[in-house]
Image (tube, rainbow, N blue to C red):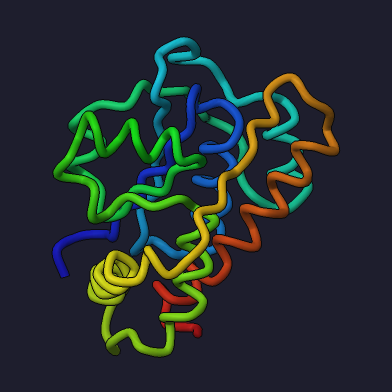
Length: 183
């Protein structure tokens, strides 16, 4: 094994969706998975996550403290084995600015569906081995799955944040199970 399997979570400002995605997957996986996040814009760089995002995480038993929004850089992409994005616009942004990342960049909700279906086909082994195999299978199968965006709850109600957190948990539980070998 060459270190933890690194997952980068990307949205626009890195204050609503990607922090929830990052912290949910982090809470569902062990130390062999490193989760970090960034935003395609620098508008909120250094800011904490939105209060409703933090409350949703806390209410679900996930860590919310210590977040600082980051602007996406090549170093974040290069340090990651998998890039999970919120929307097709984010997918286009990543693949346009970092074309070398196209094969490892997926819509988070779509990747969850692929992971659920592919988990039984992954090789035995550590998280890094399973993760690399999952990304390779997902790349081969991505066109067979509906592209499902994760809506932006910015400025909306707590109910909207709860819906986004539900969608993230639904998507990320099979990812965690596939990586950890609990499928």
